[in-house]
Length: 231
Image (cartoon, rainbow, N blue to C red):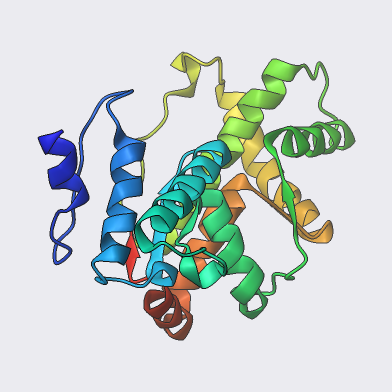
């Protein structure tokens, strides 16, 4: 429709914000926008980065782009340089850290801990530190607290406004003041154990990539030259 066409062909000299509800064709618009930018030679395919919420959506979008380029260019899309980089925010950050993480002491062979991996590690750490009555709900609450604290640390490092103070006694999730204080002592232990295991959890992928881009301008510039348009 007209609104989708306008979004897909919007000028590239300013940010574009598309607001739309579920099932309204957002993925279709992004797919056609990538193809439009390539066909009109506004950007080479390898200079485009598209970030999605799920791996499934990324795979579908990549496949659609390839099919559309084939139909319009009349040739096979053979190399990775002929297709935009499409993935989740975690996969994009993982790609960055695999390539450049060594400057921060992160091995290129790091393991990625899923939420379930992280919870199993946290369960073990809680047991080893004398915690009793450990159930899945408690693990999930501690995991949420550690995630929030890591994000707060990241914001503080770069001078962002801190998040509003918690009221743990009244937290709707069931987090208590004791759990908040306990999480403060668990966080360095948890992070130290991740490092020992050569692993990053989902939060670390984003936060460490953010630190890398903030603290290493030469690498940031190299990636800006590589991905010149981000969606």
